[in-house]
Length: 347
Image (cartoon, rainbow, N blue to C red):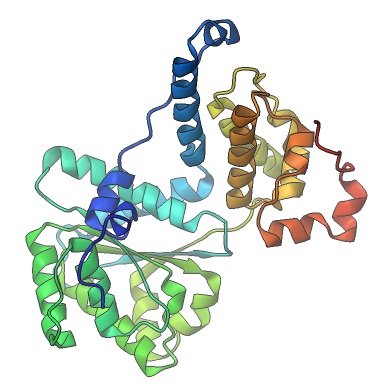
């Protein structure tokens, strides 16, 4: 059982300190010309490059349809639940891996966090936890305690811990609770049932909106039986999917996403629209998965800075490995027949 927050853990979103740090946006480096950059001292160039490397390692969050829908639903539910005294309504975001579920829920949570902290800086308006594998009731309460920095006594039972955590969350004014990796709950076994009951208790005990996110595999078990029926009656469901590319409208939406990344790049030799011109290629490489596209562009940008090439071309992207699912999709016979041959890296 985790009782303290060490320096490394403080960097994660699952601690109060880590979330506060995550909520601080990375500064966007100024855009300069190659002539300006060339005139700088080596030390200034290095500082600028370091700032750009950090910026591209975090990069922007594009307002995809999923992000927009999730923010809209979270805002609506927070308003609906404000005067609710019984079971509050929540949001469930599910879909395949890499399609932006966590990004969507954390983006919505950050918007609310910043708005509330400006008005009430003493509160903890948002709590973010992940469900551990084979989670039970006590382990979920321990995740809340860990986020809040509440030391867990060695011999505390689950009921005492639950009550203490609920009291602390109410005292700190928590209004939005994000529970990620919800697919680790399996209602077909005792531990999963206890875990679901624990989250249901917090939803009823606290004046807070619950937002769950996880793989789509959670749906068959989460909505079965009496417990599942209760959840289905209280939660709005938003599904995240890979981008489509079959219709002109779908291709336009993909191009708009690529354009957002293109505009955000801060490279000395980047030509606006260069990524957009590779939209077809980027779709095939990423299989329409936002997480894969983000990794591809971020990696290429970092390599462009480190190598001093300062721009992204297709042959640079050819040699970047992304996730297994996207790579397998790219190497299917159909995809191979349409994709360009990979070129050798320049020396």
